[in-house]
Length: 316
Image 1 (spheres, rainbow, N blue to C red):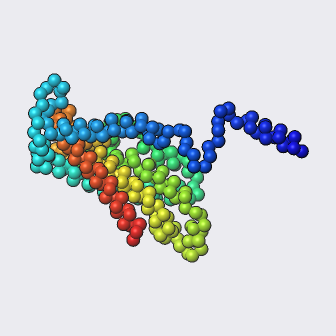
Image 2: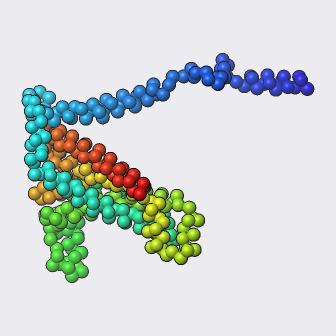
Image 3: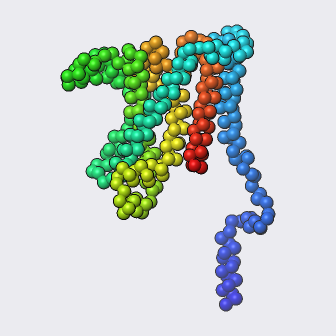
């Protein structure tokens, strides 16, 4: 019996890797701590992000056309003073606020309703999910020319209105101050509702079926169940989408630039398009950098504000 035990113990020891000694309780690990493992990522973040922010802040104090060999003149905070007095800058911020409220509300309502419908028993649900999500993965550069043709004065949208007897309301939609912004909002809603739908669908999948069954037993209908049970349990997803919506609205560039060229008469001007125009077309790098710093401050402040609102609502 003792020989058998010694054989088993010896076989167990032979399976251990050579030279490896088990670490005792309280003994320090021979491997380095966590800092060396995150140094590459830390260097990347500091080198590419924070350095870029710092350099942009430095450029915002210059009067410079962006060419390396061209002389630059330090103007201190004059670019920020000019920005505060710039009516186009405040117009872009106002457009951003209206854009966020309309697009976020529409995307939230449509995405939530679609997610609720997809959780019911309907035929061809996987096909509908793909159809709803496809616009999210399409590049704006590929779909912008299509929307320009659709909403052109001689485009298909006016053709449809004329065919159904509403020719009296046809107009050049991209040439009007109000209608151009409406088109930009519609394109954005069409593009990003799929992402909202997917996130709400995933959040609804985490709700226990027993909770919904208990609501049914208590006599709650579909609308009551969605409003009193499903929506409160998806509130965290809505807050996350709101934070993303604030940052996305501040960074909006591709759709208004590709569809309306930020016009007419700055009617669809956003901070992103204004920075591009100031930097690339007018070669005022210092002023464009000042607007970029303002954009960064607004994005960080908007994200912090939405998180604070979420914490207050959770504590209420």
